[in-house]
Length: 505
Image (cartoon, rainbow, N blue to C red; front, side):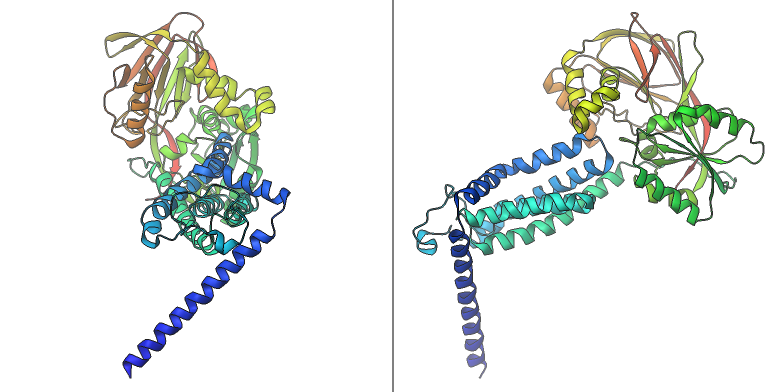
């Protein structure tokens, strides 16, 4: 009896496979019957553009070039998904099934429109990569879905239309791609979360005010993100007294200096430049600082453990704690010292920032502003000789990049880090980079990215309490991307200088 049942099940499975095989061939034949010169040209172009994932790398480049957090996260999620899908499909899965490509007896006299690849047919690598990228991008940035999903579907269908894949190859490949894209988006999110640092400082016994003042910038973030963060705070019972643009930052200074015991919570809603202006406005007051990150890098927010999402950052303010963190001051020439939480830079970063923040350049280049500005800066810039004086020592180096930072997360143009950097150690983190060969530059950036921080000849890193930097006249220095003058400059660490609201951990 059991043998008969096993035979019946085996026959059913065989019949099912045969029916699916017939359907597969029928769908392939139907797609080929629908060929026309225009459709053929479109499908071969779509299929060719996706070779080696070149189409998706190009789309990721456009998303990254916008310089915005969400598009960059979407690009990383999509590329991560492609990596997972390609590893699965082009490795074990194709060799496990070893299905041959469609033969002419399946598709009649019509020849494939593309050369048949030498790899096995099942599952489709093009379809897997296409849907992995589209799913990863859409998971991180849903608004991109109506663009990238149809693109992925077109690439997947093109593999059937051109006769190089069976429909089942494409269907299974697309399914693997969707799963890979979801996993890629999750991995990218976790990697980004690990770039967030939490200050190791005690909680102060001080209540967070229930009325707030926003300092914002039209150049950073989006209206939707800001409005969502504001609504989150208001829904939690916080009263918004005023929204001040950075062009009128003097108004914020007046408010906190005249606030007495009823000081509002000052929320910098923008990028690192907005945070810097807020810090200077409240530096000599008892006001508390909070941050809703709406900028490009948001280094200060990540250094304080603040979530990159505006709504999550607003919730963290409601549920947060108050602590003290270090700041730093910079005095350029005979001017007044300015306070900052992130970084002052000279060299390549200044050249890059001056181009990337130019309104005319932004209008002309749009989302390509950042990569083009970086390329121009690297091509045109020359080293400058600077002398560093610190802790009774003096060092002169030919530098292409100099940064003096207070935050453990500081990207800059080169992405270097100082090992052990903290916002609660009372020290400045200094990096001076001499002209490097391409090989050494790649090694230095790669090591910094993975956290190894191996010594690289020509890269000087130090942690000091104070520093004086001198150079020949005409060398600009920038504070969080804004040029504030020329060297020489004096830097000083300001331990426990700023009271800030950070998430509870």
